[in-house]
Image (cartoon, rainbow, N blue to C red):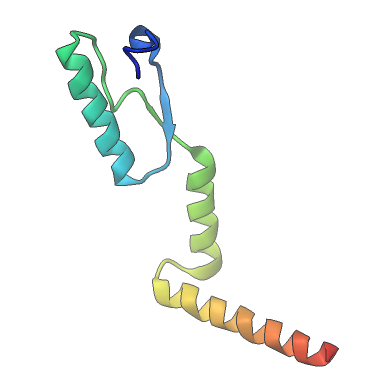
Length: 89
C-alpha cells in the first residue's frame, strides 16, 4: 500500500501501546524499508501511547499487580451489583 499510494517517504512516527506484536510489525516495516534503501529505525520512531501506560498504572494501583487481585475485585463488584439488583426487586 505504501508503494501503491506513493507514501513510502512520508512514513513518520508510530504511536502504539506496549504490545509485542506492535514491535514485531515495526521491525517488519524496517526490513521492508531496508530493501528499499530507506533509513527506518523502529525503536526511535515508536511513540508509546501514554494513555495506555496511565491505564496500566491505574489498574495496578486499584487492583494490585496480580491477576488474583483483579479477579477478587471483579467478584466483589459482581456481588455488589447483585445485591443492588435484589434491593430494587
